[in-house]
Amino acid sequence: MIKIGDFSNLAHVSIKALRHYARLGLLRPVWTDRYTGYRYYSLEQLPRLNRILALKDLGFSLGQINELLDEDLPFERLYDLFNRKQEELHLRVLDEQARLGRVAERLHQIEQEGCLPHCEDVIIKSIPALPVASLRARLPVLEELPRQSEQMRAVIQDWVSQSGLRPRGQWITLHHDLEYNGRSQDIEIGLVLDQPGKIRRSNAIKAVQLRILPAVDTMASVLQPSATWSVTDAFTALFTWTESHNYHVTGPLRLLTLEDPFPGESARNITEIQLPVESPLARKYTLLAKLNRKENDMEPKIVTLPAFKVIGMRYFGKNENQEISDLWGKANQRMGEIRHVVSQNAYGVCIMLPDAPTGEFEYIAGLEVSQVEDVPDGMVVREVPAFQYAVFTHLGSLEQLPATYEYIYGTWVPQSGHQLIEGLDFELYNEDFKDFAPDSKFYIYVPIK
Image (tube, rainbow, N blue to C red; front, side, top):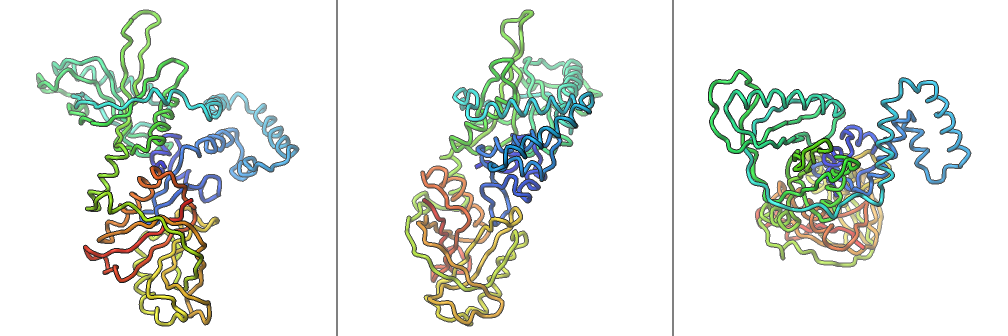
């Protein structure tokens, strides 16, 4: 799974747009962390997003796009929609050249579906710390990046020359934004130096910085091998490899320009795309250290449970202000009103409703019952279906709970060989729960197949 910020950067679509598409049902995240509200996507959704963007660039409304993505759309209706749009485009062809160019780029991406280029060329290597003279700025849309980069490079070259520093001849571009917002990008252009050195004299160009880019022990890297293979192709291949190998992105994307070793008329620079990552094993131990747990402690039990019913109080929303904690405070005062209770084990049942706005979910704080009768005012009944579950133990404080869920969904699930059954999970609180004391435990049941 890919965080929404990384997915937005990969597809050059803002997080705001992705959220809007999710609300309209065009493209929903594969999983939403109900404690942080953070959304996760998959590279398998990129083809659908490409189609949405291509159709949007053609001028179709989002309502029409929703209809066009329907696999059962009649041929006559499909033909009619495209025929009308073709007539409109013929009338505006002179003003739409730039738009058609963007559509061609999206179509190229769609053509590559299922055969993402050169994923096998991605390598992992360590990168030493690099001394650079750099200039950082917030630039307008990426279409302006080539022109702005040339201007920034000229400023940096003047600064390096005046400062008496010796360049290595490599340029590096860092994309600091975690998402693509469509309006501006936080870009840093740097000239790699032989050594940090000392500035010879006072320099009037104050915006340029002399700094050290930190070393990276685990850098995923891929070259742009030919003129027909765009940086976007390389970026897509890099993220495809990263996701398929369950690596975790840890820093800004770097583009390193390498000079052609054979200069001449046909010489061209080669771009190396670099992405700081953390291996699945390293990520696992990072989370385990954060949770102060051993690996064996986080290995789940696999159990099969029959269907059962829960009566309790309901919350619906994003839990942005710890509303679930408040819900438990109210529910605990009313548990005695519930009849036909099977045990004193309390359940927190989380249900992702199919038509709910993105990030919103239903949470029931209640007790298991043997039969439904005289449901107290303000409470609801929910049935938990029969499933096979992976059962995880959360130990310790409430503040560590997001890390437990990140371990479950970001580390264990991708490596387990199991598939998630989406839409539901639940928490079980028994006598081991001690109000989030250091030795407090409760159990998280994740349905799998």
